[in-house]
Image (cartoon, rainbow, N blue to C red; front, side, top):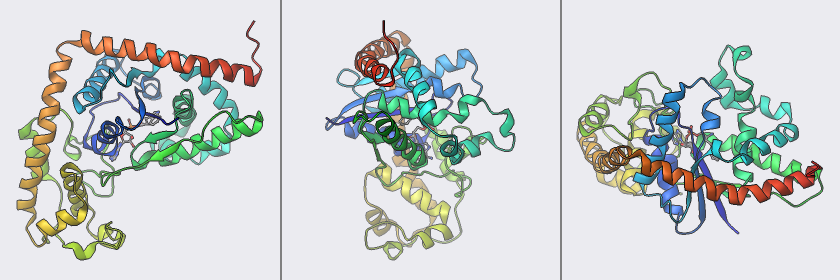
Length: 342
Ligand code: TYM
């Protein structure tokens, strides 16, 4: 059976990267898979979170999922902490994963920065918890942005080692699904940095809750270069942008990628349409498109957040259904590893 699992941290403003790289793809996958979408509050606390803020942001992410078109009746939407199997399986995986594997994780190095000694132990074992999220449901497919690829490779290694160590064919090896033309949306201020919730400059990202004026201002101020837009000659035979062309003009191609993703068109169609035009005209078209998509979602999010009782009941029911799937899988894991269940 095919089952999707994916998650978002409730750690700040959801932005266009989260939407185009992940959530929008999740919506599309709903017709083909059984889907479990999670707000990963346990991952969030690997760095300090103000408790009241964490609660508010958990509701906000849930509202964003619903506003984007996730159907919480047909699929499962819940917050991670409410299903004990995540922590229980993560402990088993702390004992399966090797320190050498974790030492290779680039995201830990980026997040811990120079002051590694002072990072939480949770941040270090973060990828083990992520593997537990996925495998507690025996999920087979995991739609994410490009930045999560290394963590998913680790999840596959953990599943494989567990199966080998205990001589079972228990966990599937989950497949990453890195979909669409915006798998790595970059900062609007610096085409070498990915768009991120933690960038101190709000001008670096478009938030899912930004109003039309803010979106327009951020796109107008987005860094570009003095040249007009390129044409389809920058594409390779498979329709993707030539990496050499892209690295020479990262900001320009980032905006083109965002446009293509929002318009749901291949890069070629966008290049055909805008080749040779000035960025000022392209930015106006991009603003209209972004405002049309985000405006509707932002409005729906605000409406949902005005009645948090509804969001809470979606999360409560989601957690109940998630526990019903993960509980029996975790019980089997306990038998496999030899926990006595008296
Ligand atoms: P998080 O909260 O950082 O991001 C949520 C999703 O958004 C994608 N994303 C992006 N995609 C394109 N361009 C960007 N600039 C960009 N920034 C973020 C991420 O790839 C992700 O898909 N560790 C995960 C959450 C997680 C998870 C899981 C995901 C926990 N357990 C199990 C999948 C399966 C994270 O921090 O995502």
